[in-house]
Length: 423
Image (cartoon, rainbow, N blue to C red; front, side, top):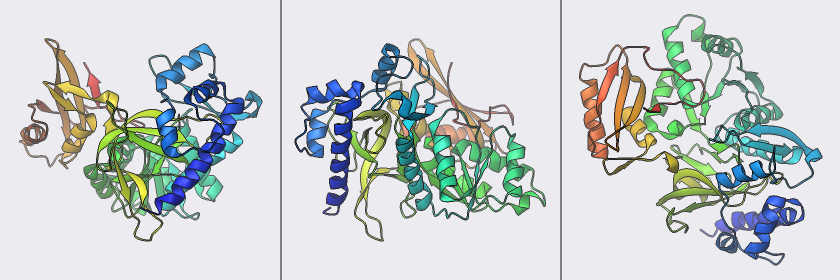
C-alpha cells in the first residue's frame, strides 16, 4: 500500500495546520492539546492517535451547557461565523453547530465528491425531497449542487404527490432523500401510474440518513420501483459534515473522503485500531472544517474497516465495508443474543412482498423481547409471516414472533424512519 503515503502525508500536514489554529483560538481543545503533549514539533498520525484523547457527544453536550448557547468549540471570534445548523435532539436537546464561510465551503467540497462519484454532471436536474430544517446535510447537499451549476429543485413544504409531480414537471434526473422516503415516493409512483408520471426521467437516487442505502435488498427494491434508477449511498453527520461517498466500482460500501477526514476504526473495549476486515466504532477527525472541528470524535457508528483499490488507480481508499452497519448504542440483547436493528432490516428486506415493517421491543420479566409487524403487498403468500420468522430464527438463532397487519396500518416516513418502537 505504498500509495497510502500520499494521502497520509496530506492528512498529517492538514492536521498539523489545524492543531496550530486550535492552540491559538479554540478554548475547547487548547487545554486538551497541551495535556496530550502534541506540541509544535512534527508528529505522525500514529502519535496523534496515541496521545490525543477521544471526543464524545456528551463532551459537546456538557460544553454547550457550560458555555451557552454554542459552547466553546469555536476556533474564531463569533463575528466570523455565518452558518447555524443543529443535530437531531438528544435527551438534553439538539446540539448547535456553527460554521464560517470557509468551513462551510470545505463541506460543500465534500459533497462535490459525492456527486462526482455518482456520475452527476452539472447539466443534471436534482430534486431534493425533504423539508429544509436546521439539519446540515440538507443544506450542504443543496448548496453544493447549486455551486456546481445543477438546476436544484427544493421539495420542502410539498406533499408526496406534489413532489412526484414536481419531479416530472422539472425533468429531475437525480433524487436526493432518505432510503425510506425514496421507497415511499416509488410506491406512490407505482400506485398513480399514468401518462404524466410515465414521463419522469429519474436516473440516479442519492440516499443518506439511514443504513438502508447499503442494504442490497433495499437498493434492489428502489431500483425496481424507479424502473432501473441506480442507487448511491452516502453518510455524514451534523457534528462532522459529509464523510463518505459510494464509489461506482464499490457498491454496498462507503469510501471515506480522506482529504477531509482522518478516520480510525477502534475496538470498543481496547480502544485500539482494528485490522482490515474487522468491525469497530468509527472515529473521525475533521481536517478541513476548522471553525468547529472535532478531534478523534467517537461517532457511535458500527463499521467494518477495509481498503478499496479503484480499477483506474489512485491508491487504496479507506472504506467501510457494507456501509454503516448500525449504531453501537442501538444494539439490544435478546435472550443473550446481540441484535442490531440493521441486521433485522436486512433480513426483512430480503422478502420483496414486504412493503413496510415495524419492530416492537418490550420487556417481560426483566428480559427484552421483540415482535415484528409486516405490511405486505397484494401478491404476498399466506405463509409470509412464517417464512420471515423462520429466516430471522436461522440468522439470529432467536424465535421472534411475526405478524402481518392490514394495508396502511404502519406509519410512513419522509425523513429518518422510526421502525424500531420500544413498548
